[in-house]
Image 1 (tube, rainbow, N blue to C red):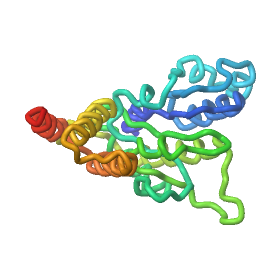
Image 2: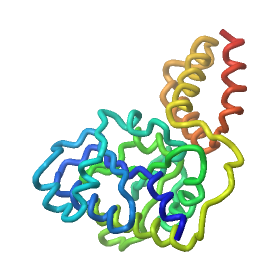
Image 3: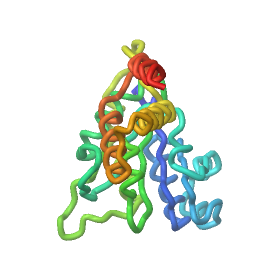
Length: 240
């Protein structure tokens, strides 16, 4: 079970959690399955006595939880992002069922950086903008009559699957084949690309939003290596 230590490289990110009790329940679910890297984005109430009460023996996870004002800031340093969502959108990353998404996460945690599993607000889930920041989305197969899960239950299922799949791997060895760009580096690349398109007149104001969204989805799906991104940035620099 040597791979279980690598679970520390997984960030569990809660976006805009509105109920402090859910934060505590999530911390408990994480500790049950050997994860302890909790990140909160714009929590309505934190810290909270209610969160500590429902965390039970996982108060240490709460105490080390990091709080950020934006998802962009929370994803700094991350090389791979999975968003938990059952909503179908016209423009979004590909969607995998929980078990398949976790298999990809396990395959990522030996590379040069952290990975993140992102959950949306209890009431509305991930926004369209938050979903586009993910490399893939993932849902949990459930009854069509009532597919909505409490956020702590959803986290528990993902963490259980992570624990089970990691337990089957004796070790994660060897050096990564490539160094992938981190979230903030890809963000800089996308902004540079956007400015280049605007400067050349290619990007039209009326269609600006959809073009930028599609490009973001394209490059998050493509998983640029750092050397590949540097080549493209060098090309854009010659156009300025």
